[in-house]
Length: 175
Image 1 (tube, rainbow, N blue to C red):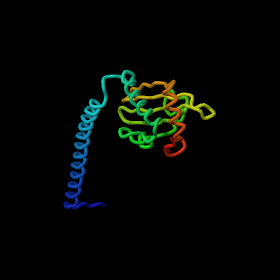
Image 2: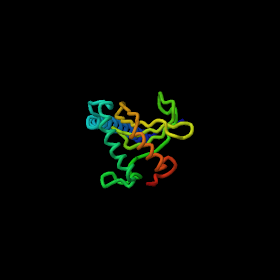
Image 3: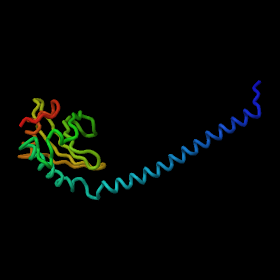
Image 4: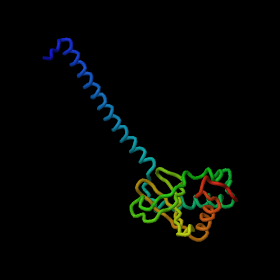
């Protein structure tokens, strides 16, 4: 038969109260953190998301990026404003087909920025390895728009991809 002395019973009650108190503190901290986090998110969204859609803002961002790419096309060391090409982008990666909904074809993503907003160039390839389509994407918090490159802009981005061979290894300035 189990016998609990008065002292042991008090210790057990005290221990249980301590646990309950700690749990209440944890719950209060979580509630406060949730309110703080929600307030922080609302401020962050307010600061970063604009009322304009990506499709209404993409042209300015695209033109700015293409100006920079023209600088790199002429000289991959860039200039004082851009710095060298191999320090410009954030990431170059393969995005396999089916990674996203309604994405039947894989592509190489040259990511320039991330977060809200972010932008990137997407390279789509023929079976022989040649580029058949290049798109510029501008994305901002569940919204996105793209421009399919053609003419001189396509040639510039295709040349940059080919001459730097950044699709094989670290970016190497060859021009």
